[in-house]
Image (spheres, one colour):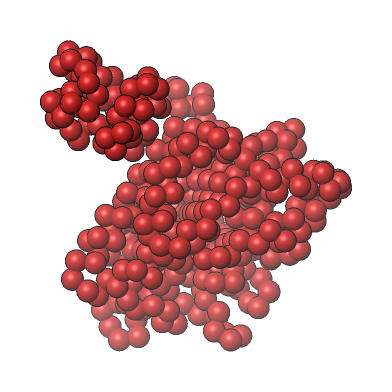
Amino acid sequence: MATRLLKRAGVSTDLCEQLKRHHIESCKDLLSLSPVEVMHAAGLSYQKVSELLQTVSKAVAPPVTTALELWKHHSCFSTSLPALDKLLRGGLPCGTITEVAGPSGCGKTQMCLMLSVLATLPKSEGGMDSGVIYIDTESAFSAERLVEIAQSRFPDHFSSKEKVLQMAGRVHLFRERTCQDVLNRLDRLEEDVISTGAGLIILDSVASVVRKEFDTTLPGNLMHRSSLLGHEASTLKYLAHQFNIPVVLTNQITTHLGGQVDSGFVTAALGNTWSHNVNTRLIVQYVDSRQRQILIAKSPVAPFAVLNYTVEKQGICIDGDSQETLYEGTDPGLQPIRVQTGFNFNLTRPVDQTDQTL
């Protein structure tokens, strides 16, 4: 990954400091320069610069991996929801991106908070005994709710104040309000993952700041938005793969307009192009005023399936009598989503006509 810092690419500390004086900190910064420019910045001979460029190039080149290696190192992060873990063959796959998309109030942030608690648990209790990096773009994170889920879902483990404080101290929150803030955070995230011992990255939500800043009806904005989302996706994919950890994103909803009047339906935001960037897509939707559903809309291992759930004091709870229901899947970028309109639930309510599926 070209955004990797030079000190993570085998470059000595002294040389990193020398290059930093010339605003050269990442592999991308270095590799975008000519050998002569690097000679002047580093104070090295042409031969040493050639060796340096070759070393850095190898460090950012994608490694060759066999199917056998992937099979041996395959791991999953349990959601603590047995029915969902069974369908996903163990839980959320490590080293990949999982997206949770759905309307407001369906429990996307509740899912993220629950997963954050789970990641801090000891491995003996199904956790990863790790830290969590939580990027909040909507001011939706609640420390009080995090603690409530922990104490309600795992009362035996979090029976003491000391363990609750330890858990909360391992969840590292970053509030980012603009697209540039999010990009800057992602570009520094490799160092953050190392320093915090993070085993889970959460971005809640990926769509929020993008949709605020990019009016896709204006010329050029759609191209710029696609470029930004592509940069975010590639960075997160790199981090997931590099550290073999799960990355969880939340996404909003939009209306996909058909060829006829009133033929639109609600689907995940950011379009078809974005849907190809996520490895697993879980859609959450309404059933009635209390009950919701999780749809597995995209997965390399799981079938298209539906599970009913409720949001309780202890977080997401799969209904005890809920059985997995298989359905005929569609394009994951066009999967209709049930939304709430008062006490009515439908698939066609217009939500946002400025963000059309591509």
